[in-house]
Image 1 (cartoon, helix red, strand yellow):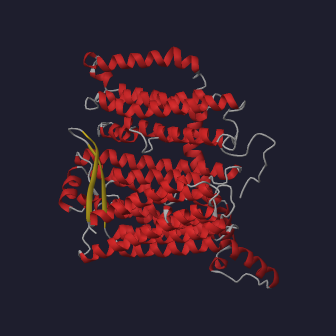
Image 2 (cartoon, rainbow, N blue to C red):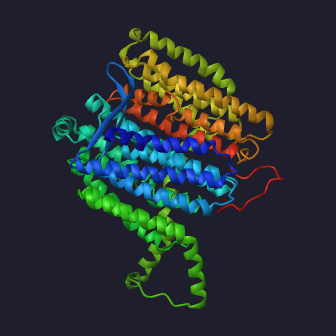
Image 3 (cartoon, rainbow, N blue to C red):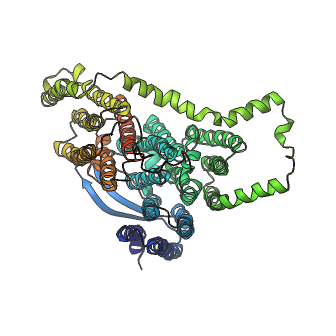
Length: 624
């Protein structure tokens, strides 16, 4: 077989398996698990064939520009796939571990209510993982990146009748959203640096990269910083480390494959894949090394005082990934890949056997108790030892840091926007939007001093609406409308940049209108069927209305720019047309998209997930 055909099989085989698994009725457990197992096994065999062809071809990078999805005079959105030693290692580890977890889960989750849902999500995750590690440019990588994010949310909230899994799933999604926007910002500035969607293969051209960075050094630093923030958020490095143990609320198999092995190492993959870009920026390399070192020290200290075996493994994995960051920053690419494989296999094994080992150790401690041996911490002064112990027990207040300096200020601003209601939107913001459209068509007559500030002003109005949606506690329909209006204000703001044509505006807003209409229909349907849909509590309506819940989730994904509507390409177009000196506009728009995603996932979680409000449903324990 040709390498092109094998690459296509590697991409399409998980998609085929996923579609087949969706068609199998829930009662056929053996068939559901078998489809997952055989799909991954066939995928591994295909990978082996491609690997040997690649070796026989002297290990040269295979790059395949596959499909051009959208193209204009100055913009091209295309899918690009590549295969090299980084992809080979990640596919090798990913296929073996997914295969093992599939076999393990078919017995572990036997007769579980969400058996089919678990295997469907597992195969969907594998689709995203394969797209990510086979990606040949940032745009293709971002498709897989988004799939990994939503699969994480769904598997953490697998036990959706419990309070803590749902709350922690939302928490993890907030961190992922920061990483998403960091990747979008890196794409934005890279478009202005090269005036095209550059592939990872092109980054290996030292002359191309160095020529641009010599002229645009600050731009290179900004892109490297955005890539680092994205990698740190995905790989649970400081200050984002606290989300990883929260993600362990899902089933043990998903914890093993997501947060012990594959998903948590994708940040390392991003650094390795973009290494040619930032390796000559010594400031970026120093920051990567220092971040990895600080994370390793802090995570090791926290892991030593955890009472939960899953939390111990989670923080131990974070510490090892910090060491991998150091190796990547120092330029030891091959060592980092070997370290990734070893850490992934070890953490998966530890998590899969953790229930058995925990019970064994409890019995062993009961019958054969031995005093704790002295450790090197015992040589420290007691005041220092006790202080570090307390700080580690509190997980160095990482959750408090994120809440105090990021989420609480945003919530505080949102609560000050209580004047926003349906009447205010109709009588003030709708006329304001019409005035904004008039300003757009009459912009040549508006003085430059005013016109230059209008895009940021309109984007700020959109941000205020989504902030209000984020803190809304009563009217769910108004919260949904505010999110939709944010996108319209963003489209208006970017339209002041002449290159953003009307057909591109329609393409971006077409997905918003479609998803918004579907979501509005789902919300009105659930309000007719259920009395309580306020946002002050979790309602758990998914149990009695699973189809409405699924429809609303798809609508939420459409509004967040998930690759199921033209809005996904539209968001990339929006950032392409934000000029490189419009940092304020880019920052406001990015913050709006972050809160937009959080508000949407909050709406879905509050209305459809969590303990059911009706008393005739079983009331579960808060945590798993």
